[in-house]
Image (tube, rainbow, N blue to C red; front, top):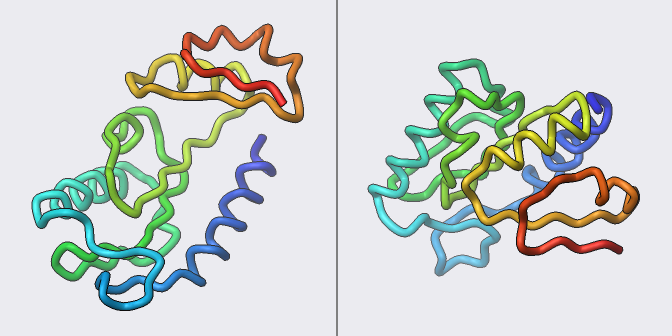
Length: 137
């Protein structure tokens, strides 16, 4: 599972570096969050994760309510960002060691999650996902 996470983080980082972040009147991929208080909330989640050991894959950058896209690796379940939706340009990565551990994290979430089984549809029968939307491809 570790090599899968390493590959995912590397590929997402490559994409992040190519995104244009600017005010909405410019041609951009990422723009301002809704309010200054939203930006403060997002910053609080990021700083909590950083303080507790998450890896910031980019430098944290903020100007007012404009926050640059940030990939947070090595997020742990005891970090607020693992359970609070940032509603902003922050992507937390929780590394797992098994499918069962991933299922445990999903089942512990209060979010309305969806799941897609594409490469391993047989895992559906063992998933125990209580989600209203399950897709098998």
